[in-house]
Amino acid sequence: MTPSQLRGILKRKRHSRLNHLYAACPTVIYSIHPDTYDLTAISQSVAGLFGYRDLELLVVPSRWLSLIHPEDRVQVLECLSRGTLETRQECQYRFKHKHLGYRWVHNIFQLVPQPHEPGLELIGCWLDRTEHQQSQMELYHRDTLLAAVAKASQHLLTHTHFNMAVTKALAVVGSAARVDRIYVCEFKSSYQEASPVSHLRYAWVKKAELSSSWQLPWSVPPDLLSQREWYQALVRRQPFAQLTKNFRDQERSHLMEAEVGSVLLLPIGVEEQLWGFMSIETCHLERLWSAQDITILMTLVANLNGALKHYQKETQLLHHAFHDPLTDLPNRALFLNRLQQSLKQTERYPGFLFAVLFLDLDRFKIVNDSMGHGVGDQLLMAIAERLSASLRPGDTASRLGGDEFVVLLNGIQSVQDATTAAERLRQQLTLPFHLGTREVFIDVSIGITLSNFGYQDAEQIMQDADVAMYQAKSAGKGCHKVFNMGMQSQTMARSQMETEMRRAIESQAFELYYQPIFA
Image 1 (cartoon, rainbow, N blue to C red):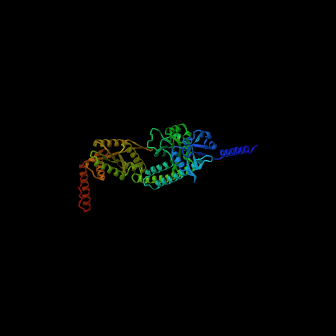
Image 2: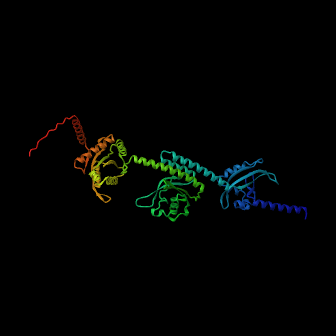
Image 3: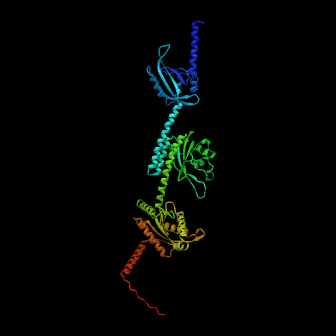
């Protein structure tokens, strides 16, 4: 064997060894033309990292550029143009795998002289950084979500308007969590159904155009609710995450109609009771929630629990301040407020007409004394229910105290509307009340006054309606009377007489004479 033959054998072995190393190396080594960026050489390891055989890319030297993500292509070309002989350059971009979609590539390259001919070439290597990039992106998104939850919690715990605070909190978290919809639903039980029904309370959507033609998948008939896996998880105070394709048929169809790909449900509890849940939904995407993200979002729900509890107590206190504790009707303060609003309506719209009905129960004291205060309270509650059921939306029934009620009729056309309403209410109240084993009958005297007397003060309206009610009492009870200015004169004369008689008694101006009667 000649020396030249021996050198040829050694050279082929060295090339074979190098090709073996290149194929096993977790990087792709390449060279490209520095002006056209056409691929001139590439290691066979490209098959293992990106699914292409080396010849697939070399046969069309410019093809590799088309595999760069369109959003990254300009940046890559600018980076390649900065290649120098002195230092290495680096850049990151997305490169399309033959089977797995886009992968993140870390590209290290340098401009070098060609070994066997004049000129320069760019040589470099590609490293697959997809997993590293994904972990960095996950960490970034998690930090973003954590910051958003902190900001949303600040809204919930410091904002003076609860409903606005919830709306802002959902918007902040929805954007940071990269989801499409967030709903907050409340479970409410009815007298007819033992199981609760979910009602939508708050919503945030990524897109303004939300179709209203589809039904929320959580609106489940009460008799079926307890059978749902997601509801069972919520009852146990556990989060529930699931892809749409894994839901039951009916729920899956609703979710698919709404173009929902995945759902995360988080339980909301108040006073150790399941109040409702938060539904976080992604569209056109099957998202698998990590345990860390769920924990962060549960922190938001915990703060929502506290804010909701505070809001409920505040609302309850406000309700008690303006409602009768026995009948739950608006009390005098709330009624006067609404009456004042109606007066302002007459100032803005001169043709606006309203009426106030003052109701006093006849024979209520007899019922209270003979049957006991418990039965009397039951009767008052039953009367309140009938009054409320007999009124139109926008009208107000109020209990002033004892057996006195008032009704505000807004937007009537004439006095006849008021008298017709009064007679209708009286007919409803004269029907028998079945209180336990007792059947109780009651009647009512009603005084009516209208806003066309030029009132400026709500208290004066109440006073005139009261005057008309006493006229109804004087007329024999169980009827209604409409206020007129003559009634006011009679009332003032009677009041003046009572005052003068009291003063006469105090000054001993009366003399007592006896008239004998002879039989």
